[in-house]
Every structure is written in C-alpha cells, then in structure tokens.
Image 1 (spheres, one colour):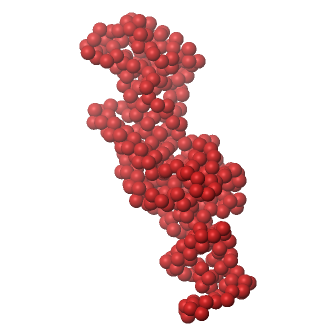
Image 2 (cartoon, one colour):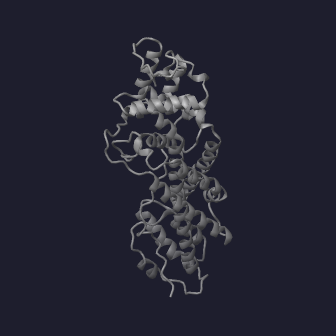
Length: 379
C-alpha cells in the first residue's frame, strides 16, 4: 500500500540559513574588521571550548550524502538545479578540502587558541569567528588581497597570535565547508519537495495507476500549517493551465498560500531568487576552495604577521631562510605562553636587548656563534 505523500516536512530539523550577510565592498569590510576586533571578547583561563572537528566531520557526511542523491538524480535523467550541478561537478574539490582540514587540524591545536566568550560562536576559536565574518560579508568569495586588508585592519585594534594567523586558512576552509553543507541541505530538501509535488500532481492529473484523490483526501494529509515553498511552486506549475477538473485542487493551494500571506506568483519569484542566490554562493564556495589551494599561505602569513613586521624592521630577520624565521616564531610563542607577556611584548623585549636598550648579563655557557646584537640570541 502506498504511503500518502506528506506535503510538508514536520519531522525535519529547521533548515539552517546560509552564512550570508550584507555584501561589503573592501572599504566597508575593513571598517567591519575594526569594529569586530573591538567587539569580540575572548575566554580567559581554561574555560571549556567547543570542538570544531566533530562539526566538520558531520558536515562532510551531509555533503557526501547530498552528492550521492544528486548523482542518482542525474542517472535517472531528472532535472537538478544549477547549484546542484556546481556541487556534483566539483565534488572532488570539496572532498580534497575535507581531507586537508582533517590532516591539518591537530586535536589539541585549536584548544590553545583564544576562544570567543559570547555570541552564536561562543567557545569556538576567535579566528574561526573572524573567518565566519569574512565569508558572510563576501558571500563566500575569496580574494587574497581583500583578506589581507581585513586581517590587517582587525589587527590595528586587536593583534592576533602567531597560532591564530596560521589557523586562518583552515578556519576559512571549515567555514566554507559549513556554508556549502547548508546549501547542500537546502538543495536536497528542495529536490525532495519537488518530487513530492510531482507525485501529487500526477495523482491529480490521473497520470498514476491510482485514481485521482479527492480534495478531502488531500486535506486530510494536512498536518502542518505551512507549505514548503519548493513544493508549492512545483505544484502550482504542474496544475496551472490544466483541465478544469483539477482546478479545485489549485484553488485549495491558492487558499493555503493566501493563509501564509503570499500568492503563487510571489512564491515563484521568491523561489527563483533563492535558487539564483544559492547558485552564486555555491559557485563562490567552490571557486574559493580552488583559489585557497593554490595560494602560498606562508607568504600570506608573513605579510600579515605583526611579529614578523617587528623583527623585519629592526633586524636581519627578513633575510633569513624560512626555517630560521620559523624557529624565532616558535621561541616567541613558547616564551609568551609561559609568561604573562604577549607575543609582541616578547618580540620587542628581544629586539630591545639586541639593540642594547636593555642590559643583560650573559650566561658564560652561551653559544660562541650567537650574536648578542641579534634578537635570536635572547629568544
């Protein structure tokens, strides 16, 4: 016996909104970075943090399921939305991002980073919140220069740690994956709604093996006060301009829409705009993932690091090889972590001592090839 078409989705959890806010130009985005830095408070001490990896794993599972559902629709030669095409055609890019996040996210690493004290991302690393804001106000469109400006403006108000700057790339990837998962969830739900609408339209039009249902039978299935938009749009399109015998069903549908404060034409426009926006966002996410994989993140890090800027301006730090520069940074991190000093404080102390501005009695066992005029001697 065929299970009645539910028409609604009363048992499903609420659909999460895309990570999308007002689209900012570069100047407005820079202003937002400064205001964000002033507003964000971080957790002090060892208060509990929220784990990021489980969310990423869950997002990966949803994305793989969505890819499978869309691929099955293509095999059945069913119509899919442009956003769904973008996802299925480029899923290898998404899969690679998920692997990179898992490989580059040590379990204890994020616990060492400053975490947000309040807001919807409370307990998550501050740098994750920064990445979230950047993605939201660019509609997931990655541009290295725009991000560089965003980070620099943020740090004019609140410096970021070395660890946070290194974590920026993985945070951006994680937020893009989160946004794409929300898009994929909407794509799959929309496809399910349209299939249910098609099945009901087939019944009304006598295209199935069963007799056309009465309007009373359809209304008996109504256990939720609100129609799903994708379902209603598909049903309107199927029933409009059909035989007068089915017009009572269309009248019922119009009445339901009126009760929701809308009309068939209005929801069709809303659905069209939603599909267009979703296509743009999915395209931006995929394109951004590609660009991020090609970017030299070491060069990016060093271009925004305040510690590197201090060392480069007052020593020969910039002329050193990467391994040496990184050794200096690791020493600065360790000293800051084991004291009440910030990383910039430690850096400036080492530079001051190297320039002779602070006196220091040297250990007789110090290395002969170490130069007291270099900050690395003290680090």
